[in-house]
Amino acid sequence: MAEDIINRVANSKLKVLDLEDYYPPGARILIDIKDWLLEGLVLRETDFRAQVAAHNWEQYQNAYVALTCSTDAIVPSWAYMLITFELEPYSKRTILGNLNQLETAIYQDIISNLDLSDYKDAPVIIKGCSKKPVPESAYVMISNKLRPFARSIMFGEACSSVPLYKRK
Image (cartoon, rainbow, N blue to C red; front, top):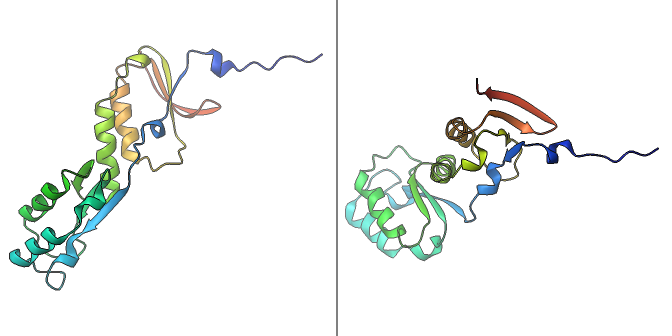
């Protein structure tokens, strides 16, 4: 007396939102400008401009770039702006910060442009496990954006989700 196994999750109105599905391809690169400073601390404009002019910017084609200075140097804003102008024809996105901040900025752009109308009045699970580096901040961003649409929001997997929000 064998009974058919029924996938109740697949047959339900439950919708799964997986932020990993939106992870864009492209290298993530950190440019540390300390090597372009005198002793890693002093920005001499003429030397700095020469370093920027001599750098191979084409290597950042279709990459996401974070600019930083890992020393305690006082770097004027125009230095990062100058590098940004050089990167603009090549990089997909350039930010001032570290690689975690870069991932946050990438997801901020993605989430702000998401059309969530498919989730209107639906119970939604925001999938939690991912193989790609989805930043924690992306889960906060999607929660804020999804709340006005969803009837309820859970986190995790269909078999073991944590309820977070239910419209009253």
